[in-house]
Amino acid sequence: MDKLKVLVVDDESRMRKLVRDFLVKSNYDVLEAGNGEEALDIFYKQKDIALIVLDVMMPKMDGWQVCREVRTYSKVPIIMLTARTDERDELQGFQLGVDEYIAKPFSPKILVARIEAILRRTNQLDIGEILSCGGIQVSKAAHQVLIDGKQVDLSYKEFELLVYFIENKGIALSREMILNNVWNYDYFGDARTIDTHVKKLRSKLGEKGDLIKTIWGMGYKLEAE
Image (cartoon, rainbow, N blue to C red; front, side):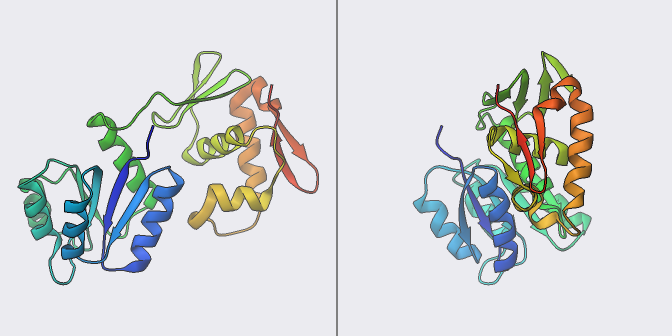
């Protein structure tokens, strides 16, 4: 399946990079625009944009104008970002056909989760991809873990940790590698947090937790059966 294209529109380059990095990590193809006019140029040239993340306050052309223009041609899902929490703004957004409205500051992971929920709702996201190892089955899109057919409830970070292990099964992973790939921008502290999360994950996986092997002085490895 080809990667879905997400257009991220914000005049703050740091904000675009933050959102882009999380979306790329979640296997999306990301296009960027620094203002409304640039966003519309990209939108007209790219015919297969799956979703637009659109900031309200921008130079040249604000998010409302971009949204109005896009809505005259397309029903592509739009998530509006704003630093304001004015109810009138939110109502205006929904009247213009905005699918979601997120106030800054926000968690990039929540934004990605909202994007995936909208794409599932609009039947653009393939929820059929299943990762598996030793009787553990993981649906990334549905955020679901099954062990021998029974659902296991994991926290968001435990889920990401398990996905990273399965995607790298049989490979020795250092704590630094795990931190860089699983914690990313969210991480403040030291590598001992890895040990705590692995301990909890092992416990929740029951007998399957034994598949996560400790590599002393380095990190962990998920044994591939």
